[in-house]
Amino acid sequence: MEVKMKSFAKEEANRILEETIIIPEQFEKDYRSYCLNMIKNFNNTLKSGEKKRYLLSVIITDRNKKCHVWEKSSLTSIIEGGRILDTYKCIKCNITGKRYGISGTIVRDQRYAKYEYCKGWNLYI
Ligand SMILES: [Zn+2]
Image (cartoon, rainbow, N blue to C red; front, top):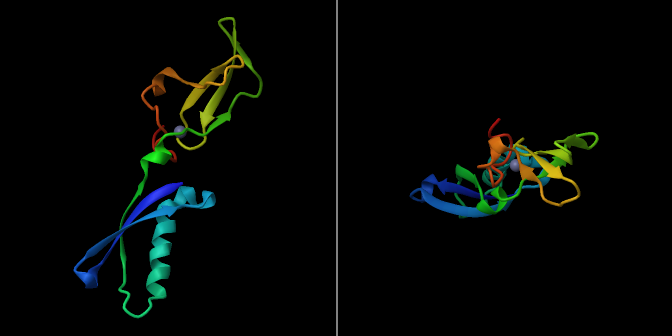
């Protein structure tokens, strides 16, 4: 996933640096720690002329908010009101939805209707 990381250098009049960082999948849940470690590593290996940096913020970019990562949560198909459906859950934000028949579209459950975009790891529910 992609984040925007802002850091600043105290010794350079608090100059702010903004970078786009791709977080490897295995670190997505701890993306803040991942960025913090990047800063720590940078500070531990300063080259001449480089100043220590401090983490200011890490924001998940809009691009990542857009897709839920659906995983089938029903073991077998369910029949409801004469229709066959499978239930799904987003592995990131935990919202649930249903897929009717063999249509490719997963419809978010009513109570999650407003979550058109995924907010990332377990931010609600
Ligand atoms: Zn989601």
